[in-house]
Length: 121
Image (cartoon, rainbow, N blue to C red; front, side):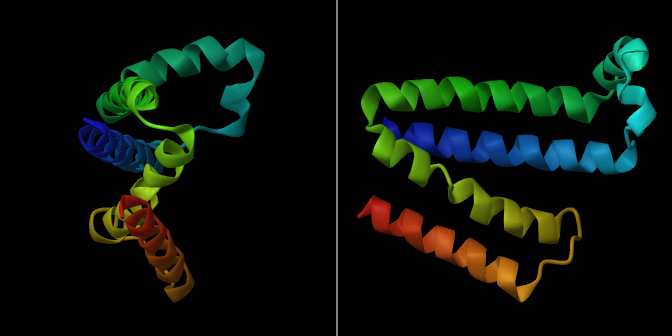
């Protein structure tokens, strides 16, 4: 059960972050849109963006799966193991979003993956 929850958390978090990044790169929110008088209009506009709404949905799935994981596993296991999303998101950023990932970032993602592997043992 706990590894199923980990897979759901990592998968949904990665999808949420990927969709959010994709959508925010397509439609940048200007600094002046964050003023109190324009906040409502900005939120309405954000709600009309399909990928962004889907990202929020996946974030909610991740949140509730994390709550379930905490009911069956220790916090000292749950938090570090769900960091596997960092490694997965680095790969997705490179392959899907065509981001330039430096050697240092690849090394960091590899370190996280190694840490998650150690937790799995």
